[in-house]
Structure formats: structure tokens, C-alpha cells
Image (cartoon, rainbow, N blue to C red; front, side, top):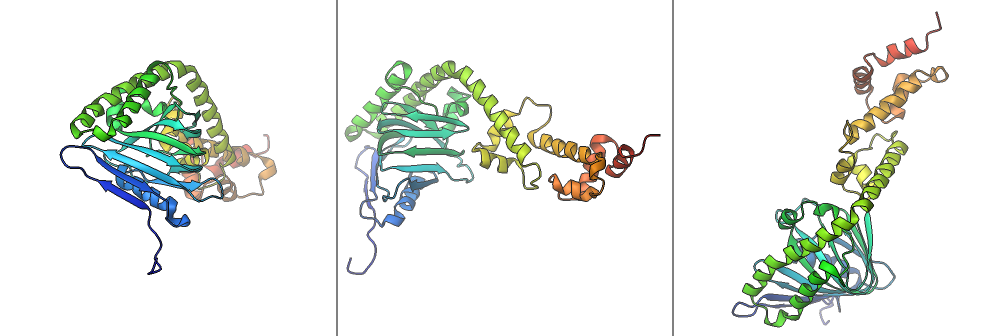
Length: 339
């Protein structure tokens, strides 16, 4: 350009007269390679209140295009991507946050959330909650997505949080019905009015709920095994990091790629909370070492610090509360010679 500025992505907004739905197109073609991912992220946040982290998975610049459509109550988009990954950005949840529901039109993707991971191919459908940790990895793909109110979907499918990132087959059963509705929706875009779009907005959640309910019935046993797998994995991570004073629910969630809420759900049938069990394990390890004659040269503070306590006074109070004796007195009693 004559003034030396960088070209911007192609953006076109069509606000037709009458009562037709609003259309906006976006493409990274012509934009600087290093800015493409950020531009797409900003566009998704502006249109759908979705704050995403996007990056390429090969050495080629990101290529993406989007046609976004909106009425008063229905928001949907057709997207194309070159190989890339998309993941969660931690931020306060939006007051009117939405679930992402995607029909895979072309290409293959791997989607993951709350420990579930699925491979989706053309014709498959999946649901994601963009306000909780997730990850998508794709090749060249084309998708049709609709953004549905979370509260409405929870009314229809109370356990929908347990069904995200799972493949819903779109070529048979209730999944085929949802795919047909999505295909018809995008086919009728040129003639779609606000009023019709709003009526479809009433229909789509119910059709999706039918597909999710069928998926839930077929997946109960697998989910039980998956829950046990994650419990064991989390427990092992806690055991390996007990000595780290920074160990908390957020640290565990980040390391295991699970949300804090899901971690609490994993252990909600225990008699103590997740973090209470962490402190109990630390106290038990300290108790064992305080009673060991081989470790009598180590001070009480050194033992406490080595198991993740950062304050000796706090350790002493917690020890006395659990064992009804101070650490010093316990050590004295356990290492006293036999009478």
C-alpha cells in the first residue's frame, strides 16, 4: 500500500432491509501472517462472546474464512480452516454464555473437554462449552456451527456438561435428524427472515436434546470407566506433588486438563473435600517421618516444609487438630525408648 500500512482481513457486513437476518463475512486472506490468528479470535469474541486461543499446527500461516448469521435469537456460522488448534482462554463466564454445537462438513478433527476426547469426521456432530477448558485439533476442515444458550440446553439436558466433546453420529438415529435441520438452515440462508430464524431457534435445542439423550443412554458405562480413570490420574498427580506448596485445585486442573468444577465432581462421593484430602495426606506423611528414628536429625519445620506446608505454626495447629497431640510431643512419644 502507498502509505506502508499492512492490509486488513476482508470483512463484509450485510444488514438487509426488511426483516432478513444479518450476515457478516470474514477472511484472513491478505492479512499479515502473524496477525491472522489474533484477528480471528477478536472476531469470534465480538460476534459470539467466545474468547479462544488459536494457533497453526504446521509451518503454514493460518487460513480461515467465516460467514456469520444472526437474528434476534439465532446465531450460526459457516467456517473453513487450515490445520490449526483451538483452546480455552480462562476468563469470567459471560452472563448469557452459549454452547458451541458443530456439524462437521469436511475434514477430521479431534475434540477434548473434561477428560473426554473424540474424533469427528464429516457428518458427525459435537458440543463444547467454550467457558471451560477444551482443545480442538484439526486438519483442513469445513464446519457449520450454531451457538445455543447454555441455560436453555441445561433445562432440556440437565447433565449436558457430561456430554460435551463426544461424537454424535449424524448419519443415523436422532443425530441424522439434527444434521438435517442444520443442513436445511444453512441452505435457506438467502431467504431466511428474522421471524423464521427465531422459530428455528425454538426448534434446534429440542432436536439436539433428543440426540444427546440417545448418546447419554449408550454411554453410561463408558463414562463410569472414564470417571475412575480420571480419579486415579488425579490421585497420582496429587501424590507426586504433595511437597509443592503451590499445589491447589487450579494447579491440578491445569496439569490434568480438567476444570476445577469437574475435579470437585470426581470426588464428590468422598467423606472429605479434594483439598482436605491433600492436607490429610501431607499430615500423614509428616506424622510418619516425625515417628522415624532415622529422621530424628531433621527439625519439625524441615519435615513440614518438605511436605508442602509453608508455615510451621499452621502445620502445628493442623497436626494437633487431626491427632490431638502437638508435633513435638508426638515425636517425643514415638521415639522414646521402651520402658
